[in-house]
Amino acid sequence: DQQVKQNSPSLSVQEGRISILNCDYTNSMFDYFLWYKKYPAEGPTFLISISSIKDKNEDGRFTVFLNKSAKHLSLHIVPSQPGDSAVYFCAASGFFIIQGAQKLVFGQGTRLTINP
Amino acid sequence: DAGVIQSPRHEVTEMGQEVTLRCKPISGHNSLFWYRQTMMRGLELLIYFNNNVPIDDSGMPEDRFSAKMPNASFSTLKIQPSEPRDSAVYFCASSSRENTEAFFGQGTRLTVV
Image 1: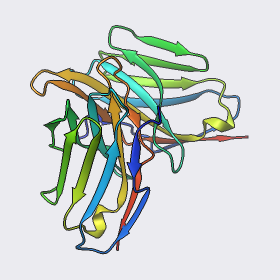
Image 2 (image 1 turned 180 degrees about the vertical axis):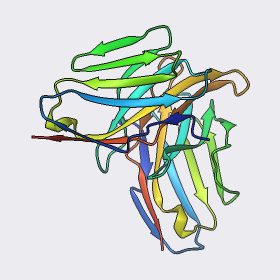
Image 3 (image 1 turned 135 degrees about the vertical axis):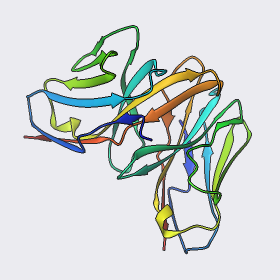
Image 4 (image 1 turned 45 degrees about the vertical axis):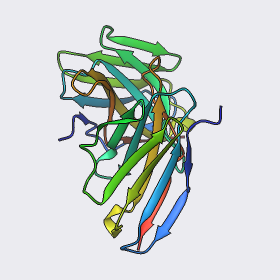
């Protein structure tokens, strides 16, 4: 049961244009959402996050949008740069009372390629 | 801080052998996660600990997989016996009560031949 889904395995964007990565989730208990970036042979690194009380969070070239009613979030990168080429993972977190701790669940990832 | 430290970085073993992956979380972090990266499922949560106690191991694929956290600074993920389909990159991550974001180690690339 994939609770966090990234339906696009790959995305190719021209340098300078906007990159939009999408993510859907199914569990309404999730209340915090994160994006991670992963380069080959490295662990994922945190990029940006958003709480469920907000619908937008911006950090430089990166903006995350959250649509709670649709259980959908997206990451916008503008302008896209060659160094942004990586695999991007969407993640969701929530405090599950039964389990008594935060649980961080990831999607399958989207490979973003920025073409010069 | 050195971050989350995993060892070994690479492991090649024969089918049927026991494999032990190790993780040292960031000092002061109280949650530890083991993930497996596959093409189909992305970063798949295997098990996570809170204050050294296993909270949810529903992601552990089979009884061949086991994980322990004997203290706040060390955890192991063991596969016995290993099979070729276990070949993947295994990540350990830790987080603190104050920060929801998890910090990842560099991973262990496991190859079972």
